[in-house]
Image (cartoon, rainbow, N blue to C red):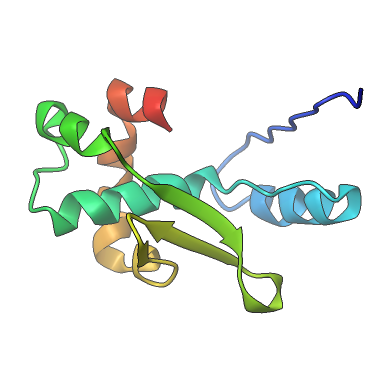
Length: 113
């Protein structure tokens, strides 16, 4: 039986974590899981539902039945979908960027993702 290995890389914002992680995943034939994209996707979903991102009680129900998918798109680039919506580009918008840390701070969100 082959051992299952997870590698996590932590560090400051914009220090190259994603670049290194993608290179390691490619070299080792591992799946690259972009947790930042996951939090951004949820933030996009919260905004689309008209929920206050700072209200954990309103965000929590949105986590039930959430279908968040990370996959390889054309050219090997990561594709992000949430509840059937391709949000790969939308999650990089200034509106999402401005709220992602607020959503990510909720314990229910961190536990679910």
